[in-house]
Structure formats: structure tokens, C-alpha cells
Image 1 (cartoon, rainbow, N blue to C red):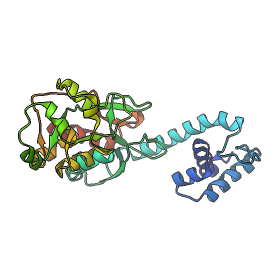
Image 2: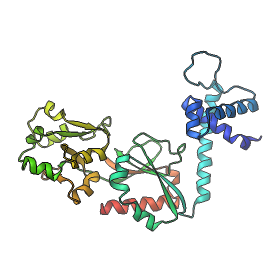
Image 3: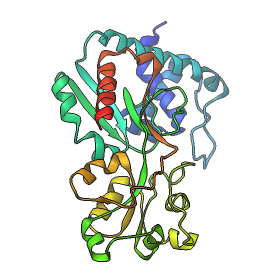
Image 4: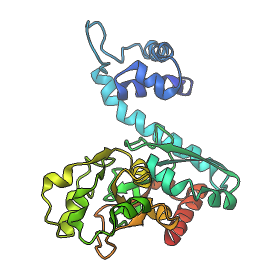
Length: 306
């Protein structure tokens, strides 16, 4: 068998079947949809059998044949093992590209201000950041390691807790001077509350309503719900820095702004620990890859000194 000759065609088939689209597969593989279609047809000619159902007008998505669907798990497992084999060839060196997935806000407020320290330690490792809140396929997108905010459970990935997080109100020094000292949390509802929607669909993500309950505030839910809503944690803090209102800040994100005096923490006696935390995530089979280990150890060291 000459299967290696058809590795590109197999990759095109697997991506097309996963996305149910030649166009989406092409975007992933950085080729044209026509090229993906040609690769799939080449594979079909070699096999002497179709891989997708055709001939139905108005079909919105590609549908793999029954035989193709049975073969897909083995093909995907084969690509996983092939990718692992390539990584094994690279073991023994911290040089090369390390692809790291983090949220845009975590990159802006925590990782990027510190990344020079890692590059000083490992100058031969080139860090490539993939900033997204959406789940990523570590194999298909060639992700080595990431930091995610959640409960610590991501199917198929190892997760090590990096940092816990506290949640508290913050505002600019100018806004505080303008409105005077706040004596009770109920006074917050007379100001614009800035809501962080970046993890709004994640059960357990702290909200103003939850913080107010913790603070024994008597203001009604309606008063707590009003305000400015932003779906990026870094932008939430920036809005507070610019004096647009009071933000419910995440401590990991806000720490540098507080230290620099751009923000002031309100009601520091009220402690609200988030049920979510930051975790380092990676594929278990890549745990001993030297550059991954170096980056993981560096993250842990930075977190201890936050």
C-alpha cells in the first residue's frame, strides 16, 4: 500500500468530514476549497469508492458515507499518533515554536506584560499566541499548551491549577474622588455598574448579583442588572480606568492596574473567591516535551509571585 502518498488527501478528507464542508476544511488547512475537493477525489479514485454522499440538491453540508464514518476514528487516531511521533523527534531541545492558547484578556492583562521573562530564560523558543475564548482542537490547531479559566475539566486534556481568583469592585481614583467615599455596597447601585460578559454562559462565573448577595446589599436585582455590558475582561477594566463606572474585577486581571494606581479596590474587607480558577492545560502525551515543560514551570513560578 502507498498510504503515505495520500497523507495530504487523508488530512483533507478528515477535515472535510469533521467540518462537513470543503470550505471550512480549506480554511483550516490553508488551501483553497477546490484543492481540498481535488484531494478528496484523488483519495476516492485510489480507494475506488465515494467518501461523501453526493447528488442531493440543496444539501447544506457534506455527509460522509457509512463506510467513511466507520473509518474516521481510526484515521484521526492515526494522525494523533503521527503528530505525537513528530513531537518525540523534537524532544531533548527547548528550541522551536511553542503555540500557546489563552484568552485575549488574559494575554493582554497578565501574560504579555511578563512574557519577556520567559524569552530571556528560553531564547531559542519562539512563542506563538493563539488568543481565543472558544474551545480549540489541540491536535488540529497544533496547540502545545494553554491557560484556561474554569472548573478544571477539559476532555482529553491534563489540567493543573495555576491561580485562584478573587472578585471585587474597582473604579478609577477620579471617579472615587468625584463621588466621595462609599460607605456601603448599596451605594454602588447609584453608579454605573460595568458587567463582564466574557464568561456569561459559564455556570459559576461571578456576577454583580452574586457579589451583592455576598456583601449583604439590599438593592434589588433590577438595580444590580443595569449598567454597561462588555464581553472582554480587559475592556471591562479599561472602561473602569477611564471612569465610565465601577467594574466587578477579577483579581488576576486587575492586579497590575491596582499596583500602578490606575484602579482602586472598593470594600476590601469583603472577600469573594471565585468558584472558577486558572488552569494550565495540555495533552497528557506531550507532558514531557522540553519546551512545554519549561513554559509550564515558568507559568507556575510567575503565578507564585503574581
